[in-house]
Amino acid sequence: MAEHRLAGLSAPSISDIEDLAAAAFSSLPDGLRTLCGEVIITVTDFPTEEVQHDMDAGPFDLLGLFQGIGLAHDGAVPETGRMPNMIFLYRRAMLDYWAEHEETLGAVVTHVLVHEIGHHFGLSDDDMYAIEDRTP
Image 1: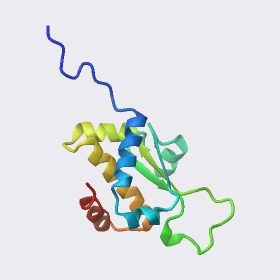
Image 2 (image 1 turned 180 degrees about the vertical axis):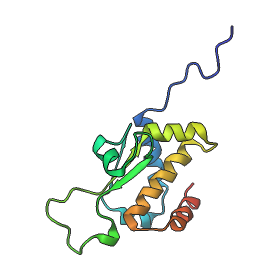
Image 3 (image 1 turned 60 degrees about the horizontal axis):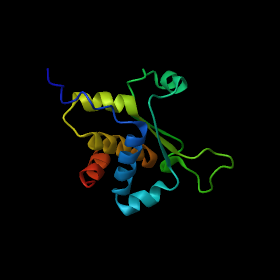
């Protein structure tokens, strides 16, 4: 019996998703990346239990999350001791989404990343789609 063509493959790792996110971020327009400042992008398998509780969501319900103070709500002088703005990308939920749709994994990661950056800027969904359309 012949081995199935997918038998030797494994799911993309956190490191793989980090690489896709870094590539997606570097392909964003220069001005947008500059405005993101020191935002930290991190990949984990699932949101924390606290985030799930706060968002009233299950472990597979969130693809990503912006945590911090968006530019539209930020003061002229940052507060002392404030945690940096962060974007969380949730690997397992993105892999499930990817498995159920026709998009490439890179397109899924880019979509989630742009959407979460959009929350940082207070952008509309239309603005976010326009940015995605310009991102290779």
